[in-house]
Amino acid sequence: MSTYQYNVAVLGGGPGGYEAAIRCADLGQKTVLIEADELGGTCLNRGCIPTKALLEGAHCWESFQKAGDICTVEGTMTLDYAKLAAKKDSVMTRMRRGIAALEKGHGVTVVKAFGVLEDAHTILVDSGKITADKIILAMGSEPSRPPIPGIDGENILTSNEVLALESIPESVTIIGGGVIGMEFATLFAALGVKITVLEMMPSILPGVDEDIVGLLSIGLVKKDVRILTEAKVLTLQGGATTAVRYEKDGKENVQEADACIVCIGRRPCTSNVGLEKLGIRMNRAFVDVDDSLRTSIPNIYAIGDITGKLQLAHTASAQGLVAAACCAGQKKTMHYDIIPACVYCEPEIAYVGLSEKKLKEQGRAYKTGSFQVAGNGRSVIMDCTTGFAKILSDPDTGEILGTQIMAPRATDMIGEIAAVMRCEGTIEELADTIHPHPTVSEILMEAAHDTEGLCCHAMPNK
Image 1 (tube, one colour):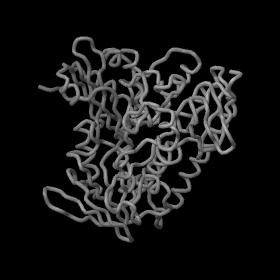
Image 2 (cartoon, one colour):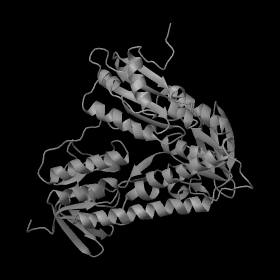
Image 3 (cartoon, helix red, strand yellow):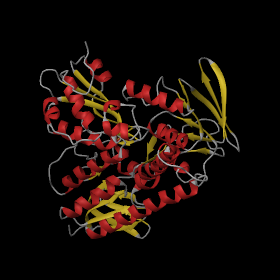
Image 4 (tube, helix red, strand yellow):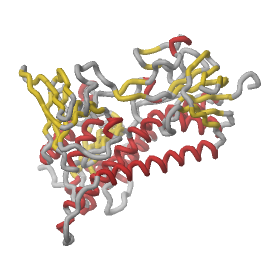
């Protein structure tokens, strides 16, 4: 330790980096966290948190639109998007301050600077050099800007620019029907914006259960969202009115709107930080790591989006804790088979483990149990009767292989299934777990009962 200023230096203050720094400090390592921008990274400042804050506001606005069923509204209320944006900003500010307090409270030194690797133990910053025995790379990712002609035009936006808006356009073309694209479609449709989604693949939300995708598509179409799949974008034209030229069914078309949002993935921030100089082994643009998050240089670790695993904030956090433990001399490895994924549409979507499609591709036997939210009292109270829970289990052992949920609060409930799977629990044990009533979580118990054809709240199949 006497050779270096710190035991561990963490480069990047997103959810993976800032949690890794705290855990390192808690494990007795003198730790420095280097971040050029705001603490919290993309998730807190340009991703998860601001998006969900806006979606919560949109949900409140939709609920108000339905309030005529239970109250008399005198006069008119109008949506003030600037106030919603300000609320979003206040949430971000509060959480950034919280992270800064946590770092200080746990004894982490925070340096606000852009760090560049000089060698395996040295990071260059504005004020000089920071040396550490071990280094954790956590630089995160940024929106991908594919080489489409015209992509740099006026009102051609990425998620970063969308989340900085203080007013909303009347119409939007969304390029990309993945998670980010569909959450933006949900947000703006709820606020009355005319939406067209262009997706190059045969379906939106690739990898999500087909039955869920079908229900989501129906719900969005009812809100006048136009979804065009197998549509290949050719060129973009910016301006007061944006124009997207695309090809579908062998014909070229043009879609005009006030703005165009490009949601075609994210790219790792691995350029200009010294990786090439050190000769760190790469996998395309991603940093190659082993199960303990070590790079090809043994004392340097990499976590989060730059590793090319699942680009999810909670994956980065889990990787950060594993890397921190290894930096402190413990032996830990990362496992990716039980990581929940969430889509904050309306209703919410969440899933974990293997899908039916994947099980069929593997030729693996499985049993299915499902339950519709229309039969769940709490969901009906919440005025949501669209969606279901589907649980897939091994027919011999009862082990839960995967679960897909489309329901109110699905993103909160999927953690229960992940915990059961992590403990190698069975469908029988889930079925025997008494769930509180009335809650949406009862749909998980009901789906487990349905696996054996013993669901009291579903009509029998005769």
